[in-house]
Length: 336
Image (cartoon, rainbow, N blue to C red; front, side):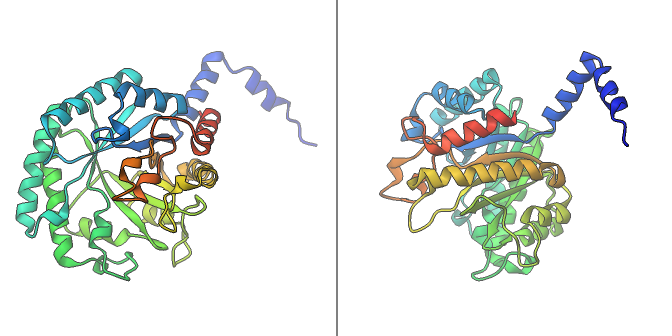
């Protein structure tokens, strides 16, 4: 017969400080869940920034991912970004800035490099003391991947498009190195049908582009990470290939039939609940540090130009709750 008393006694005899330390270790080991938003654009996100932070806090979210194009940023947008970062510090919300520069605007690698370097340097010099992790580009892999290719091999990417993207990322890295040398760098890849576009990151590394964190985007009908052609979980593939912490910087239900996920908020709620659970469960195994839902607010102003893009918010455009937001809040209250 096993005697469990010594174990019980050891727990009982632990000091309050030891229990507190154990609890803090468990908490810091958890994924930091955040959400995407577009607070620098007109429409639903033109509401006061204070309201957006109240929404994040009420849902239990701890980070906010924001796209910034440093080439097109206006003084007004820079002022709003500065205000956003100040409020985030006050509310203890981490800001992740994703530098987005359109690859389609360039045909030569050198031009892309120079433009990205100067614009990134100017942006980071304005806010480098308050942002410590930067994501370099957004879904460039999907721009470069050849039609019908799996994305698993470095040769799966159009060389002409890829060289421009390489110039942009190298320029961002150079600007960041000059403007905020202690910052960490994310380079991201996406889910391409069944497989993650791991070949994109392999090709960048082969070309000497170094990064600190593997970024990953995925959308699925049921919230579960895809199983690739080789039978492996997509996160397993990225973890084994690159041996870096993983930040899932976008995830949600996949769009379908020309509609975004919040066209059916009950299904979006089920999908997000499954995704949150699976990410939390897999965090230690695959070193997942942060994960960002896409996105905070519905954007009805996009219905006539990008109908699918208009229907991803877990909150209505006016900030009202949905089944999806209730599911997220319920999970995060238990998780933290």
